[in-house]
Length: 226
Image (cartoon, rainbow, N blue to C red; front, side):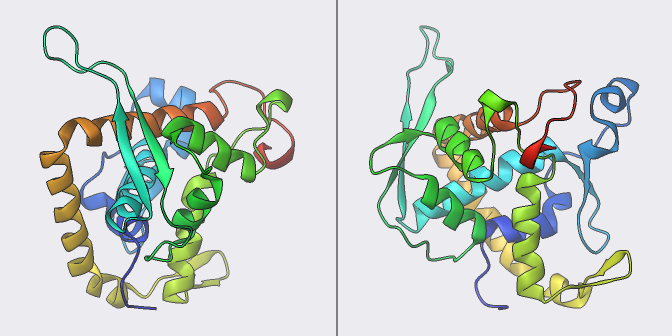
């Protein structure tokens, strides 16, 4: 499975090269504890969970758009001074089968309706497929999103657990660096050429995660979010 890798899998492996690193502060430890940080494989460094999650979703939706599996449309307008206002990005499915064959891409496409839906609502629908029930106060586990992508990466690399640790083939991971660089360049070109759409997409992904994620300081819930 060392062919063309999904963007989300490559980002998970090399997130330490481009995403925010955790800040060691009393406030962050009080609200998030050690769960704020995610260790990337093969000594790739620690990244913040929030930054990793929203980018995993954004890169996946952007890649699905590149593959013409979905259509993304920014719904909103700029304010009087030319600045951006809060707006939604809508998703309209064009194909039921993603070319990249990534697990997260397949799950997001499954959550799509036949008509356009906003990205936050799409993420909520995806969370409900995972067992989220906001009426019953069942939320997405802290590792609920990253586990989907990590499982996909392990499957592709045929990674096995040895006692308490996963044994990563770091030489094979290193060889994927050129693929990540190529995808990262395309992503940053997208952010440069369609800045408002890209920024809105990232904000919407963050908003959708906030809807399905258990709020800080809330007592642990039962079910899937327990």
